[in-house]
Length: 101
Image (tube, rainbow, N blue to C red; front, side, top):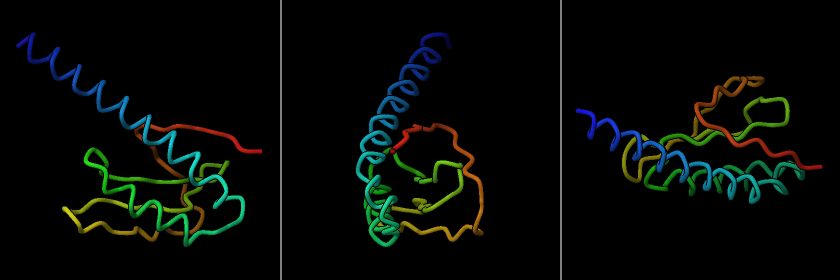
């Protein structure tokens, strides 16, 4: 049981590192779209990014933590844009915060 727990913890840590790497890359890629308010381009990038194997959900928020775009993976090739109520705060389980300015 101990070996399994350690292996599970190692796998979780590895998944979190991959998620942080993807999130950091995505944050850099969407910065110009957010500043220019190009939300269609932002949605297109998130729709493609949720295709990553480890991704189950991708959310982008503004500097105040309000959702700008939100995609979830339902099944292979069946990803879905979630239309959140305007002003919905993001509830991250793992997040990368990056300021642009």
